[in-house]
Length: 117
Image (cartoon, rainbow, N blue to C red; front, side, top):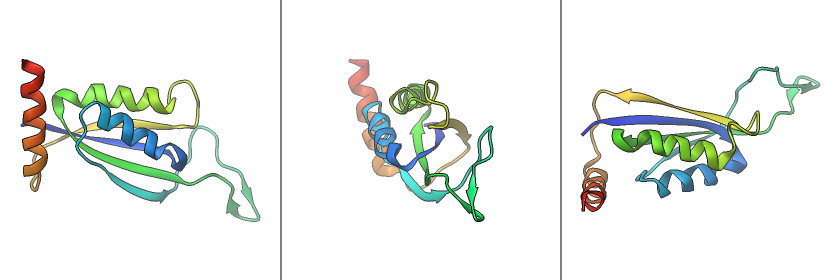
């Protein structure tokens, strides 16, 4: 089974929205790294040397490769990545190998079997 890692960088108030959208399209779990900092096209403003930009979260989703594009698009649509500049971004990368996914693989295989019926 092949996997992709979807990495989502978004405002902390959109984290739950992104995770819900991913789960609705077949993601079986996620890891959230809070308090990430980033800078987009325009540098963030500071006040007395302190950033006034909101907190960002990094969401990591290891998903089955066949579902990855659908999950990625679902996250982008739910969070408004294309329509609301600065709301966040998401991308995917190939995973060469992974260990510790036995329960997720079983659930994914069951979902794939349901789709084939």
